[in-house]
Length: 204
Image (cartoon, rainbow, N blue to C red):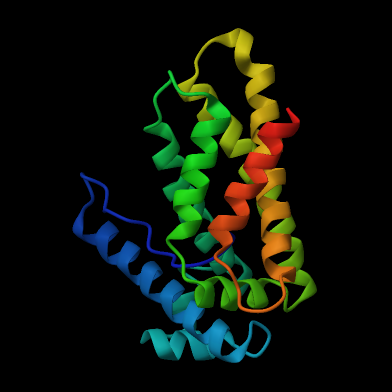
């Protein structure tokens, strides 16, 4: 996924009042922007509209985000953080590819077909967002590799773990493409993702 439900989770343990208010304001702006993007489209949503809906001034907006695109980055970072947090809990006794599959399937299953469709349509609605989506896949591959190396620490496994990261992102991209192109009543994206990993393991 790239961009949905930008809730970043629990607050840092040592967070002060000022930091908490800033975090909460950023969260509110991101949630408002998401709602407006889905309702009005990315291009049709102005920074003034986001600021007004969030109850802040345009000047205050720029103290939190530099652009609409940076809000998309915020979504993606939050989405990625939840996924890698789950992967960090994987047992090093489990096969890395199986662990990534389980985490990705669990992660994508959290979203309804309606949410998936709305965000997918949004991310494909402009050249800028399509470019952002492709960049996210590349970034996700790097992050995934780093976390795999945290869990499976043997240096001699790094090349194999890099391949796990690469093929996992590839499986996700192909699964989402198949999900998008399906005819008739839409089946859950998680089903396509699990089938993609199953096909990958069969070929390997």
